[in-house]
Amino acid sequence: MTQTQPRTPAPATGAGPAAGQAPPARFAPARDASRSARAGVLGIVLAVLVVALGVACVREALVADGRIDGTPWLAPTVDRIDGLAPSVAVAAIGAAVALLGLWLVLQAFGRRRRTRLAVSTAGPGAPSGVTIGVVDAARLARVAALEVDDVLAARAMATRRTVTVTVTVPPGAQVVGQVQAAVARQLSPLSAPPSVKVVSRVSDELRSEGTGS
Image (cartoon, rainbow, N blue to C red; front, side, top):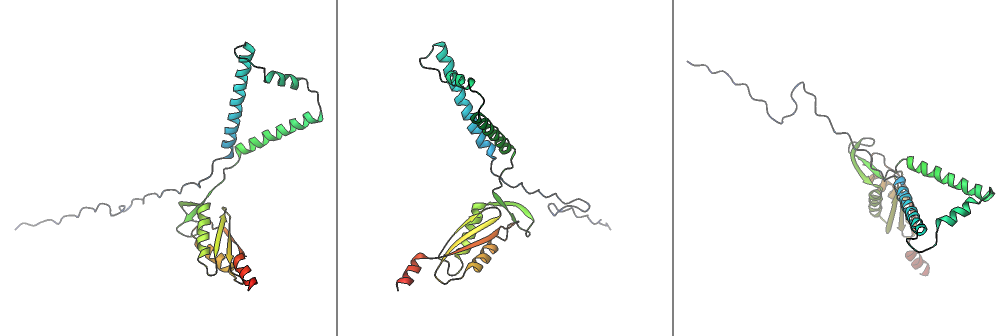
């Protein structure tokens, strides 16, 4: 009589990490998106000025060599500046140029402005790598305000720290607290929800109709 040996079941594929193996590492959340630094715009402006100065220098060389007709532009200006004596005006212009240079250096090394808000899926303070723009936060705040009773119209402006909602209501309506709670609830999924400020205004049309009657 033959005896059969029991077979060992093969490990299932895709059933998860085997015993003793570390779980797969999670992806780190992406860095906060930011707007390009102001130095980029200033660099473009300075590049255009340098190109314009180069074109003027080329023209001066062509005029001096007799290749083209015209009167020099830069040479008379340099001659006037060369003959200037020390004065209060010259000192003031020099100080203004120095301050402008210092401002340009500070702008070049300044931090970029963050323009997006992190969304949390596990409660405040736990970023998930998902972000929305401040414009989107303002739209969400406006939609939440319009869902409140007695709100006829709403508009919202947002920054990374504050959301300002302006609502139009009929005379006698008190909706500031309700709108503030609705907007805060709508923005609660954010990792760092901004503070909510509500401004209530009475509809001019309803006010005039009530006065006329």
